[in-house]
Image 1 (cartoon, rainbow, N blue to C red):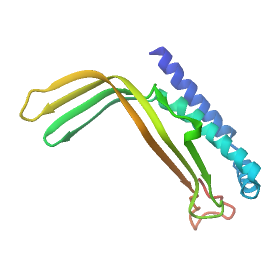
Image 2: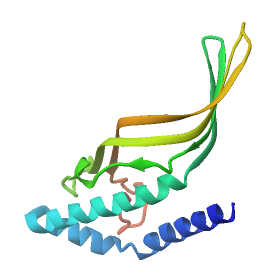
Image 3: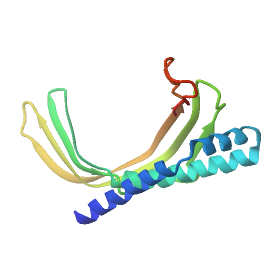
Length: 168
């Protein structure tokens, strides 16, 4: 338990440090340069991929979902002890698309595919309304999953002071 708290604090500290160190003017300048220079664009995309992968591979394993439950066709169910400690994908299976930064549409899209995960020690409880409840523990594998993240500019409200920058 202490190790989990320590890992959570390390991840939180790293996220806060990255947010603190983020320089939006430098990022915009680099992105504008990437728009017209293919080498700078490739460098930026590779950096984005590396950063995203590092972040995802550090954050997801730390996520512990206590339980998910529901009711389908008069059958109550619950799955607990869900964790993402054995998640994997490759940099080659990630595509980063950087669009026109002046557009009001999507600016950045990150797509990943062939993501796999192994979930150990899942606890499953099923209780059909007319039968006896069943409970078991087992492992599960999820393969060939995909993920798409899209980022857009959020324009400042019309009543914002002049010079207010859009937010991503």
